[in-house]
Length: 327
Image (cartoon, rainbow, N blue to C red):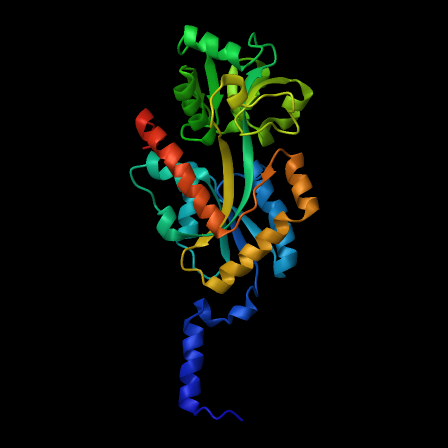
């Protein structure tokens, strides 16, 4: 029998319960399904990634991860829902560089604060970006496109997934560093822009590899330069922007990581970090990711925060300098 007096035992129990949202024990987590908020429509690259990782994480955690698609408002709808969720480990969110890096510079006000409201769990994946031309384009390589754009500023259309998207901001950075001006044509997502590029009504596009991999591999589209730091194994003959245009340090991706509400307890966050890391070490998962054009991006909370800081240093000044806004 315990020697602790009953009133003190009750106080200790109450303290332990108060330290854990809902009074549940840390070691019992998770004891019900976990909601995974995705700020994009079902069927896209972000949704596919969440379902792929979630299926493997469910095996590790012993509970399903149920996808909750909340598209719209440049990810702000999903981000706000996450920020306002109970910090109990039962809501996770696919946060991308738009949510965490671009939006604070693109909007005067946001319904969330990326530094105050979220706790990083781990990085997940990068979406390589490719400067791409239509199949019958006169431009044989990136240098030819740049020369034409410099000779006729604004005379060549270049599509993107929308104002403020990684695709658009990559175009802006390319224009600044290469000294050219393409006519930016924003679409509501990558799919309609891709359709016009395939139809030949759009001349060029900053395309993410998961959206266009099959068309780039088959020759239905012409890849001019990869925006990554190194060449891609699926497109080994395609030079990087650094190689093609002599722009040292040029590197741009769309990337994503998992976050939870900021006050989520350490023990819960640690379990989620471990489960995500295990999923990204699963060969079947990473092979599937690479098969759809995604690059696995392992890294825990420290690596996540370091990437955010590095990205802010590059993109926030560019957004302000170019006067880009979503208000």
